Length: 122
Image 1 (cartoon, rainbow, N blue to C red):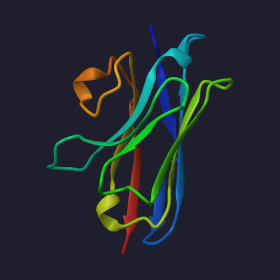
Image 2 (cartoon, rainbow, N blue to C red; image 1 turned 180 degrees about the vertical axis):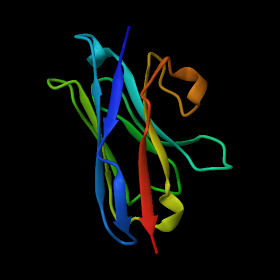
Image 3 (cartoon, helix red, strand yellow; image 1 turned 90 degrees about the vertical axis):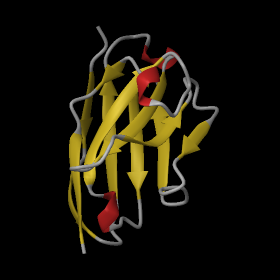
């Protein structure tokens, strides 16, 4: 089993910043593509960002590009999402996911964390 646990969510004012962390269990976590997805009430789950197993490539949704940065520390088996210039529309539950295939599609990811809530006030 792979286990992922997100942390770092909370309430922040518009224009502020948060850094989400996701701890990935297992010594083979460095072989996985890691992604962040989010889901707001009444909306479908949407892709936010991904990073390949070695950190050599990243990809972002257009809605967050230039504001969010994904990174990973394979020695600590952790992936991060630095979120700057937050907007109320960023409010959602954020999920960390791991998969063997690099894809923006949620179905490509095998393991998921329980999520962490991010609320951005106006």
